[in-house]
Image (cartoon, rainbow, N blue to C red; front, side, top):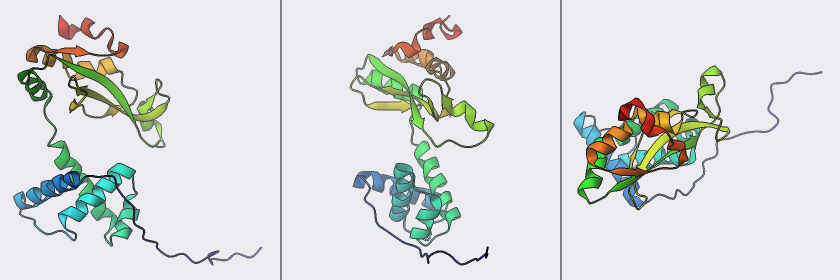
Length: 205
C-alpha cells in the first residue's frame, strides 16, 4: 500500500448567489438598527456597509448558513461574521416589547383576550449530555421551547425567551407570571389543553 497526500481531485472555492424571501422593509430595519448602534458607540466603520451586513446575518438566520461559508463568500473572517450575527441579534432582542407593556397595549386597543401557546423550534442535535434537556418527548425531536402570545386575530404580540425543549407549557407560563400579567391588564386568555391546571398553581392563590 502506498500512502499519498495528493488529493483525488483539485478543489477551489466556489461563490454562488441565492435568493432570500425578505422584504426591503426587513433589511432596512435591521440596517438602520446597526447604523444607530454604530453612531451611539462612535464606531461608524465596518468592512462592509450596514445593508450588506444585514443581508448576511438574515441569510444565516433564515437558511442556517454556516459562518465559514458566509465569511468566505464575502471576503471577511469567520470571527467577523460571528460578531456581526451576535451584535444584530442583541439589537433585535432589545426591540422586543415587555410582556406587561404588550398586554397593556392590547387592552388599550379594546382587546379582551389573547391567545397563548407553546412551540418548539427545531435545532441541530449536539453531542454531550448538556443537549439532553433540549429533547422534547412530546415532539420527539431536539429544539428550544418558546411561549407565544397573539391577539385575537393571531398577530404576534410577545414571545418568551428560549428554554430547553423539554420545558412544559405550564412551567414556562408560571416562570413568566403570565396569569399575573393578564390579570393586571384585565385580559383573558384562550389556550389548548397543554395549559390545563395552570390556574391551580400558587400564583393564583
